[in-house]
Image 1 (cartoon, rainbow, N blue to C red):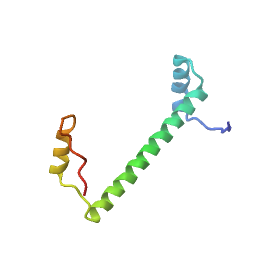
Image 2 (cartoon, rainbow, N blue to C red; image 1 turned 135 degrees about the vertical axis):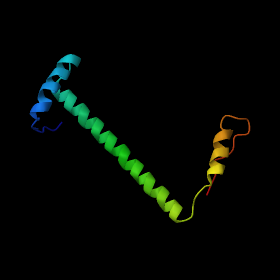
Image 3 (cartoon, one colour; image 1 turned 90 degrees about the vertical axis):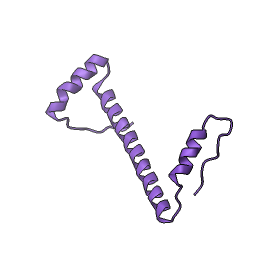
Image 4 (cartoon, one colour; image 1 turned 30 degrees about the horizontal axis):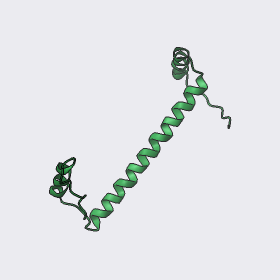
Length: 88
């Protein structure tokens, strides 16, 4: 495991200490959790952006699905006659 020094802003130091004591965890644990959550959130946002760009390119290329087709498909979910996903 690597070691990194950080400077904690004064307005964060006291709340960090209090939370660490409250949940009986170290400040190090809290900081690592915060970084882990931030990185995961960033990964999810990057994936959403990638999906958005793919969707926009599909529309540019004329590959789109009419909303009525999507609605029919969704309404069929769970029924005996569930439809296959609509294709562009």
